[in-house]
Length: 234
Length: 234
Ligand SMILES: [Ca+2]
Ligand SMILES: [Ca+2]
Image (tube, rainbow over all chains, first blue to last red; front, top):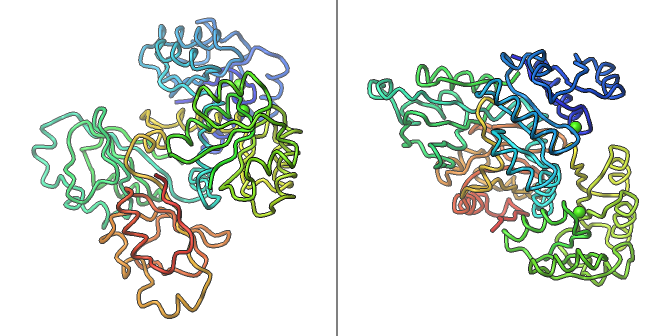
C-alpha cells in the first residue's frame, strides 16, 4: 500500500516531503546518481533504475501500490511511464506532471487519473491570493490544523439504500451527532455543493466532508454500511 | 480597484485567465513585444514597459490597485519589483512568484504578502492527489460550483462586541439562518477549525466561511457591524 514516485527533481522532492508527513511508505525510482543520493540522505528507499522499463515498475511493486506519481524531467518520458503502468495494471491510479497543456491532454488520454502542470497550479494559487482581501490560504491553513477534508464513497448497491431507515443528512444526524460538515456531494458528473439537511443520499454518491479525525470517524459510523471506500489520512 | 500583473509568461497567463473569470479589471505590465501581443489578443490592457521602474508601477496605478502580482522570469527582477512597490506604497498587497526556497525567503523579507513557488505548489497538489482514494480535487471542484470560501474580518472595536446582544455562532443563527458553514476562525496566530455553535466571536477574528453567494450575503447581514472587511467574489 505504498506510493511509487518516479523522478526526484524539484516537484518530486516536494511530493515526497508531503507524503512523508502522512507516514505513508514511498519508493522513489530515480536513475540519476546525484538525485538518488539526495533521496537516500532524506531517508527514502530508492530504486536506481529507468522508470520507462516495465521491469522497473514491477520491481517497485506496481501491482500492489496505492498510486503511482510520475514527475520525470520531460513529458515524453512521463507519457511512456503512464502507458507502461496502465499496460501492467489497468486499474492503477496515476498522477502525472505535465509541462504543457498539449502534454496534459496526451497524459489524460494515456490514462493518467490526475494531471498537474506546475505553471497552472501556481497560476491558480496566485490568482486566488490576488483576489482575496485577507492573506489566508485555506489549504495551507488546513495543513496546520486538526481538520481534514475527506471523501466517503457510497455503495452502488441499491438494496442497501432501499432498506435503510434513514437516508437524509438530517435524519442520519450528520451535523448534530458528528459535528463534521458535508461540503459537497458528487453524483456522476453532477455536484451538489453545501447540501442542506433534507438532502437524500443515493447509491454511488461521494460525500466530501470536513472535520476533525474524530468527527470524520463518527460520520463514518453514522453512514455505516452505505460507505464502501474512505481513507482517513493520518 | 484593479490587479496589476507584472510578467505575462506561463504563470502570468494562467493568473490572468483566472482573474478574468471573476470580472476583476487587470493591467498587465510586460516589456517583451511578443508576450505583449499575446496579452492584447487575449483582450487584456497592457502597459509595455519595464516593471522594475518606479515610474512604470505608478503608471499602472499602483497607488489605487487592489493587489500586485509579480511573475517576471527571474527572481532578482521579482525582488526588485517587490521592493520598489513597497517603497511607493507600503500597504500594497503583493503576491510574488519564487523559483527557489532561497528566493522565497528574500521575497518575504522584502514585504511580499504571499510567495508561491510553482514546483512547491505542484508538488503539494500531486501529493494530496496521490494519497486520496477518490480523484476529486476540492478546489477544482469549487471552481465549477456555485459555492465559495470567503473570509470575514471582524472589527477590532471592543465596544461593538460588548454591546452586541448575540455573540456565539448559534445565537447569531449563522448555520440555521444563512446555511453558510464556518470552516475556521483565525485569531492572531491561533486557528480554531470547524468551530461549534457555542463559539463566541471576539474582536479582530477572521471567519472563513463556505457557502453560496446568497448564503454568504445572509451571513454578512447576520454579522452586521461586527464585520469590517469582506470581499465576495463575483
Ligand atoms: Ca520532479
Ligand atoms: Ca509568468
